[in-house]
Image: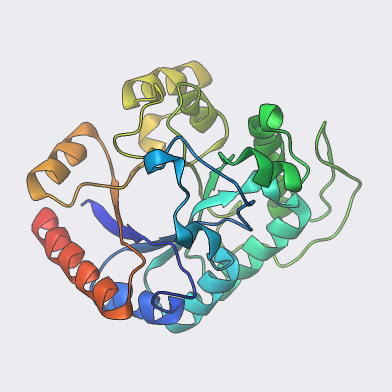
Length: 281
């Protein structure tokens, strides 16, 4: 059965994360995805935005792990996910601790959606060069997996280097939460096949990545495609179009919720819940 989840930019100008999580769970939806931006440098623009203008809510997002921890405390069933966490802007040792702690608090309900980021200045403020972002992301993920899986982990790479150490708690989920890569590029399928558990491209965005390329990448790397979750960001709020996405192979449809006022968000969730019930039956 297809899973139906929601994505929203959580800010100080829309519904509180706790109220949001409760509403998502009450409506029978499956997961809540929260994105992140530590900051938006003044003067930022993006080819992905209309006329390059960065929306106001990009500047006002909560830290996703603080918000998701609050959500974990008031829910029991829904998955709690980042969509996406900017690994290129975080310390892998600190992040591994935060994620393991959240997974413990949430009783194993965490999904780690990751990406390298598009804002050059933002990641440079964190010490990552745009040209190396995906190599940095890969190595930091490998380092975090080592921390989660070993009692005395050590890691020696180009971008991450630490001697044997202790880091507890370990995540409840064996080996750590599933890692889903959010990217549309032609290189994304091979990255997913190498070191991820899921793929969630953005619907309608060009880039060259597709499910057929993922099948080929899995065969090349000895992975079983059925082991990889296929999530679709910005899924269509239309029943027939959603069925097309399901037929293409997507396991999880992730619907965007505009970060408007409290009542508007609840109305959007109601609409998504009605659609989800139709798709499941």
